[in-house]
Amino acid sequence: MNRSPLTGQRLLATFLLGCILLNYPLLFLFDLHASLLGIPLLYAYIFLAWGGLIALMAWIVEHRSD
Image 1: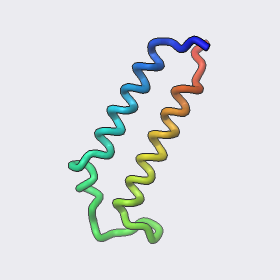
Image 2: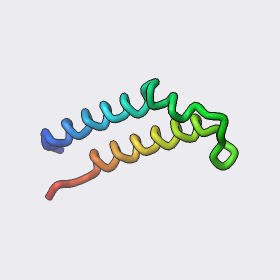
Image 3: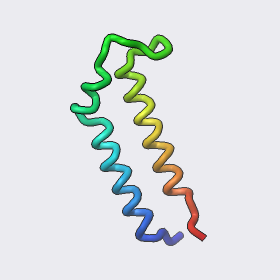
């Protein structure tokens, strides 16, 4: 199974996006005394960002450029 070099570049960009999304300055914006469906806003943000990154990586790996 040969992958294009573009796949590696997209995965690297996703990694860098994850570093930005889960870095302190952005996490500080969500460190409020608020909740989303009973879950603290910070925890909800971390869970959604993490799930979004996993979904994005799965899409990149499974995507076929015909």
